[in-house]
Structures are given as structure tokens and as C-alpha cells.
Image (cartoon, rainbow, N blue to C red; front, side):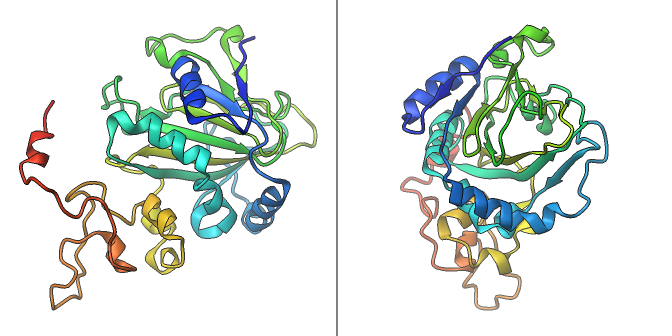
Length: 296
């Protein structure tokens, strides 16, 4: 059986990136404290108590999934800003963008009797239109409870980001992201992976999914509806920026206030909804620069 590499919480960004380039998946152990895990569980408990089971085999009939985690859980928002994760995302995605964004949030609870999810590549959400040389995602799954092969630990195929897209893995090429609570799996948008089967009688495996993407792509989770302005106004500015209340380029993502009769908020960064914009894309030194970057 294939295996994943494990790194300590003290691992450097370069160490994490090196393993990602080779395997497209790596586990960092013991990152979150027990207090943080308790906060996540208590804040999400009211939403997980509802019948949020999947509607098909892919989402899992015995799997619960809830989103809008930035709006629902301050602790989840804090994890999204985790320095190790954001530095890894910034570095890994840097060759393909000027910045990154929070693309997707979900708490996934795999219940007893769940079957294995089909192996897939998350980049497929954009319909296969992205050139293979562009890596659009760096994703994280944080273990809120213990992940074991028996209770549904994520299946992942190390090195499959380098394969031909039609190659299928043999059973011995599939690894299982077994990890203790507070640990995190980093994986890319091009690696084959899927939820594992829960073969236990009474264990529920809970994972916190926080995915980072290139800032010029449409987000999988519509953050502006999942976390509307009346909630976003109370978020830390860096988290608000990360979910998309900011510009992703000189004109990418601007807004105009439809009720503004004084032209105070015409074609400005969404940051101006809350405070004066401090974004890095408000001005350009040379107007020819965006034109020059439009082709390679």
C-alpha cells in the first residue's frame, strides 16, 4: 500500500512544497490545539445536528456536509488564516496568480457504513478547460476527529498529479490519510483522491475542508452569499479579503455602489464597503503593464 509523508508542525514552507511537488499530498502533524478543536466542534454542532446528508453516491448518503464556515464559525475562520496553510498556498500557487483566495469551506462527517467516494481530481470543477500545466488549487483537510483507514480516512494517490489523466490506480497505489486530531492533510487540485469507506459500527469521521485557489478563478463556494456583507463587516480584514471582498488585479473584482449619487464608490475595491482600501491593485505605475501581461 502506498504511504504519505508526515512532517512535524515545525516544518518549513519549503519542506511542505518539496513534498507537494513530488507527491501532491503531505500530512502535517499536531498543528491545532485541543482548545481549538473543541471550539470548532461546539460552533459547528448546531449545524451538524441537522439532516445534511449527501444526495447522491458522490456526496455520500451517510455523509453530512455543511458550508458557510467563515460565517458560522469564528474558529474555522481562524484556521483558514493559519500561517502554515496560507504561506504554503501563497508559495505553491504563486507561479499562476498574483494572489490566492479562499475557494471552499466545508465540514464533512463520514458516518458508519459509508462507501468509498470515487477517486477524482478537484480541478475538474472548472470543466477541464484549464491547461494541465496550471495548478489551480492547494487544499487542506483538518482532522477534527481521528482519521483511520477503518473510519473513512481520505484516499489519496501520491504522485498521480504527474500521471496521464486516464490512468487509474491499482489498490496498492492508494494511500490513506490516517492522522490524529489537529493534524492536516495538504493536497493539490490535480491529485487523485476521495473520501474513504467508514467500516466502523459507531465512529463518525469529521474533517474541516478549507481550499485555496488562484484568485482569478470562480470560487466553488459562493462566498458573497455564504458570507454576505452584513456578516463580512465583522470579520478580520485579512479574512474578508481572502474570501473575495477585495480586488484580484487592477480591475478584477471591482464594484460600484448602485445607490451612490456622488461617485464616491465607482469602480473601487470591495474593501471600500468596510474601510478605505489598502489593496495592492488600486494603482499601476505603468498603464501599459496590464496589456503587456495579457499574453505570454
